[in-house]
Amino acid sequence: MKMRAGYSQLKPVVLICIINSCFYASCQLSELQVCKLCKGKIQNDTAVGRFCAKWAGRIDGRCCLGKENTTEHEYILGLDLSNCSLTHVEELHGASTTLIIDLSLNPIVNISDTTFQGFIQMNYMILPGDIVCPGGNTSWQKVEVKKGNRLCEGQKNMCNQTEQQSLNCPENSLCAPYGPGFFECICADNHHGYKCLRAGEFPALQVFGPLGTSTVVISFLLWVTQRRKAKSH
Image 1 (tube, rainbow, N blue to C red):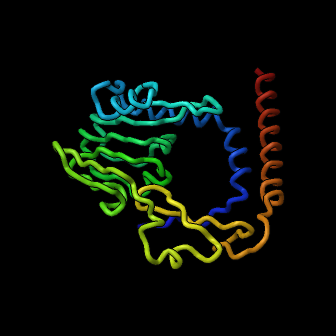
Image 2: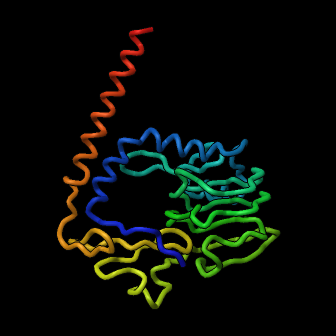
Image 3: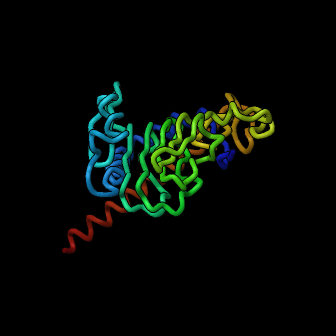
């Protein structure tokens, strides 16, 4: 069981979400890149294909996409990277919302321990038979090897697996799952800072105000520079 480095605060999450929305286009690009990691598209008779049909998803390359009810934004429900000649799995940007991943039929040598950090909804994985489930067998409800593949089913909540939770997360913080074998400590209300030791509201304006201002100034300077270059040509 591993803890994610650092401590999160509940209050700044709203501001971070607003900032993230400004990069909506780049997030879409990341998702498309994951869907096109190898040629072909999801077949209907595969595990991810059957899952996608059950969830009424839309197939795009190697991804099964679903839609959010409120924003109509598409997100990845399933990811099929089987038979893609992958030897290493290190980064799967944009796929943290997936419920199922198929990595079978690949000559995988290593999967980074941090690859699936943040994949809190992932509930089913298909791996080559000699690859261990992320987080180890104790991170899953059921692990079995079948037809040469390792099946990892039912991701466990790491916050419910330890009798020493109070020792892992400091006082004034809450444990939250953060992917197979990982958890993170989130500061409770009215606490923030290192190990959630500071009481009171998080100084969001003081922290993000100067950052936002500097971003605007730098963007403006870059725009002016590009304009001058365009005129010179």
